[in-house]
Length: 416
Image 1 (tube, rainbow, N blue to C red):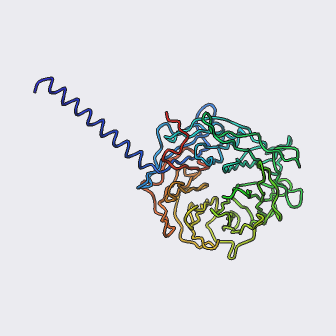
Image 2: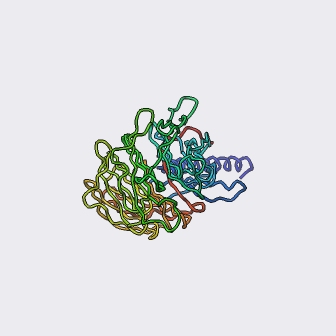
Image 3: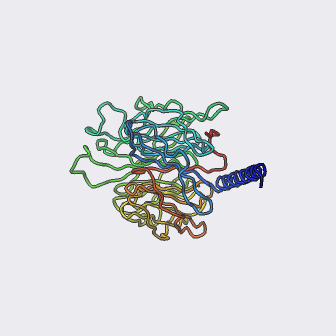
């Protein structure tokens, strides 16, 4: 064989290998069904920012793999909560210790690009949710000068209008809506007795957009030991024109001892609240004016210290993380009533849970003390769970929250 022939053969082999690699990359891209964003509260580095791990879910095995360049800085310290915009092109991250919300544009490859940072009206954001029109932010304390960990006060909720995307910009956050009753951009969570401190824990906007609910508990006049027996509440608000909130008649509603998570079904008919103090799930019917009525059979048993909850938007199933047991409880849902389908082991201290928004076929949990993410394949006919291939998956230190978007080109159009 002469050198010219060898060069031709070598060139052909290189072209063949390149073609195979391109084909493999295309197959891998096709098999990615969702991108999952997992906030973690601790990270190395001078700024001590938290991190966002970005996983892609394989549509056949459910395997979760971190994308190139992951993790990304969260833009602040102690990222505690996440939500995505309704167009799946933006991720909003609440960084508690920096009192801010960071907006990231999501690329078609799942990567995150910081776009905007806003300070919350109150002190220490801890929960966020969004729909097409508004971003709702719950703060641990109201925006009063005297409020701090040393001198706590009750929490509050604020509303940011979401301005639609344009040809040159993604969605943007408007100025927080003013509550004329208090002369500020927040709605206080006031104790029924008018004096005790109310500690919020979670927030949910129903699918219709008509009502937003905040779970909270009463920790007495000072929040210092001895704390009185735990009393939990759900604060309900009607969402008016421009995002202004109005308390729902009868709010706040009794909700066990220490509510930790809240979720509603896709028809805006049922609301579910996890109660850590009593190891159960409270079920409510949402009335025509937003008022809550306890469902027959409620509360429904859960594991020890239930911490988070998700309702499948398509199939009649509900899933709850149990922090102390390191498990997930699965339930079927019929007429709002929950029936236990089984319990599944996850990593230590699960604190957040989600379902893939593309097929509703995969479920994942963030395990705070385990520094892991568990993945499951969800049976759409039985509601049972099967471990995804190679689950659990390593995450950054102390994961706190999860959010996800479908793949298939629904990111923000930026890919680098």
